[in-house]
Structures are given as C-alpha cells and as structure tokens.
Length: 102
Image 1 (spheres, one colour):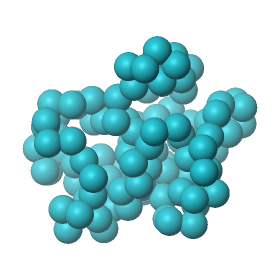
Image 2 (cartoon, rainbow, N blue to C red; image 1 turned 180 degrees about the vertical axis):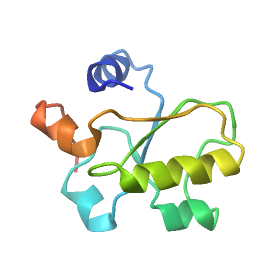
Image 3 (cartoon, one colour; image 1 turned 45 degrees about the vertical axis):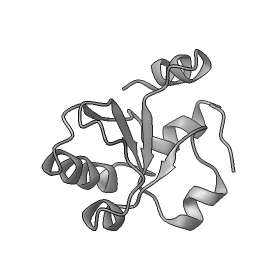
C-alpha cells in the first residue's frame, strides 16, 4: 500500500489495521497512528493483538522491509487473506513527513 493511500484512510477514519512488527523500542519512538505492535514472535505465538476477522485488511510495516515480509508470511499461514506491505516502510513514512504517535 502506498503511504499516501494509508494516510488518506487514516484521516477518513477508515484505516485498515496497521501491524508494526518492529521492536518495542522502535515502536515507542514513533509509529503510524493507530498501529498495533506485533513483532513476528508475537504473531508466531498467537499473542499479537490482531483482528479475529481473517479477511480484514492488514498493512504490515517494519523499518526497512525484511521483518515485514516475514510477518506477512506468518499472517498468511495463520489464515489472513488480505495482508499487504507498506511501500517504503517506516523509513519512507518518516521521510515523507507523515504523522507518528508515541
């Protein structure tokens, strides 16, 4: 998903679930508004706060991409069918000056 599309959905209060798979320190330093913190290990152990609807739109992000790709594969293996990656990930989100919350 393109960052500008996600930003529009957030502003319109129609945001998908944003799944941030970075470390706790990274997440606390700043994340996309409304994002849930779900590192890959929490997804693997079924401890992540994810929607029960397996068809819900999920947008996965990490800092640069590799962790998000792993999380996307884990989510798909858990039955989630509508999982996409955020283009540019958090590094791109920040470079574009998009809002963050702490």
